[in-house]
Length: 103
Image (cartoon, rainbow, N blue to C red; front, side, top):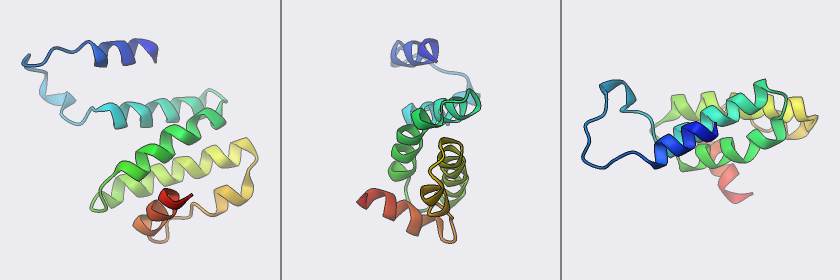
């Protein structure tokens, strides 16, 4: 993950990038790092990465917000914080996103 961070930080402005990286930004890198942390057995490291990403998304990105809330719930579950996992239920993804902003 450090190599990804370094490559992202060292990109050159003005250099045309491949079309397939149009979606890749700091937030998406953090989301993927959070997902990796969950899979690697370090769910507590995933929580701030996913929370900050969810908070930063515009409300019209409901798909991403809902998906990342499910990963946040998984991180909480694997960390043993069951109440936090239960409260990430995205019945209305943007409502949950706004709750994260206030905590």
